[in-house]
Amino acid sequence: MMEAVAKPQSVYLEDFEARPDKAPEWLETLHRRGIEAFEQRGFPGAREEAWRKTNLRPVTEAHFGAVTAPGAAPRVLVERLADIGECYRLVFVDGRFAPDLSDLDNLAKGLTVAPLGEYAGEAPERLVKALGARADIDWHPFAALNTAFFQDGAYVHVAAGALVEKPIAVTHIITPEANQQAVYPRLVVDAEDGSEVRVVERFISDDQTGALVSPVSELSAGQNTILDYSRLQEDGIATINIGTVNLAAQRDASLRGAFVGDGGRLARLDLIADLEGEGGEIDCNGIYLTEGKQFTDFHTWFNHRVENCFSRQRFKGILQGRSETIFDGLVKVFEGAQKTDAVQENRNLVLGKRALAHSNPRLEIFADDVKCTHGSTVGELDEEALFYLRTRGISADGAKGMLTLAFAGEIVDMFRVSGVRDHVRRVLMRRLGVEDADIGDIL
Image (cartoon, rainbow, N blue to C red):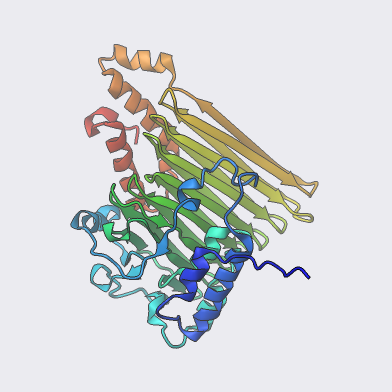
């Protein structure tokens, strides 16, 4: 009689079972669901459509055990906390809350900003309900790993009717001690009906730290709510960052996203946006900058589930060196979602002769009264414009930098948080080697 052969467990399940400390009871069940989902799902295969162009061998051929204790945040990274101006500040170092680097004094009325670790005993009902509600761990393996292993995270709650003008910055610092280990940042934003809030999430590390950063962010905008979310992925060149962002807009909500991909050896973001209430709007604008042998991948899924909703996606890429990028976006209009208005655009500027940009905007429409458009371009700088600038006494490098800034400026100007907008301008100028005196009124 043949005996059944048991499926071998992964090293991640071994890590999970060997954890020295269990989470609070309200959280441990979610952790357990995460590792079970990963064991069932595993890493994506090379033939899976959504992953076939993303080379995951740097992840799958290594073992990134979860960081067990935070390292010391390098001074040069701590100094970057001031990059985006005045804000409430919640800082995590290697996935753990850093109170000495955070500033949560004098929070606005109706605003709660706290690390998840604050709720060691009992958590608010709204947090328990929201945490894990959006991230599909059965579908996304890295969301499953995050759900299994995150030790701390940020919780932002805005009460109904509260108007919060000062931005909330959640910064994840990855230290050299996390090299060849995994960090699992987590963010939950729950903005109730009629509220207004701005949240900035940022990832930074040095150029030597080869960590795996796998964040999950879940943001929900209630009825008649304005929620601005900025995500700045600015890891060092050795870091791998593979994460998910889940957005949901209810009736007449306005959820606006600004996305920056600048850094990392391998960076991928899966952005899932759900329009669930009539009159809802999700407007996302992004820019990605690559050089050397960097690989950056933006996959988006915009789901129009009800009628009379509006969505915009505008992403631009600037590629240098031998870098490679992917933009793969889907707008899905569900049956009955009439009067949908959706626009999807991807433009790429290739500055490196060996750089490669993949662009694949897509539509799936199951309603007959909609307005949906999509388009993409991959091109180089305009030679006539370059020639014109050269005749005005501008150097070749200066002319290229000015035209590239003009290309990026349309997206940067759409970023709603002024501190983020100014910071991204400075990043662009530094990357392109352009001085203030060169650019006039371009940015």
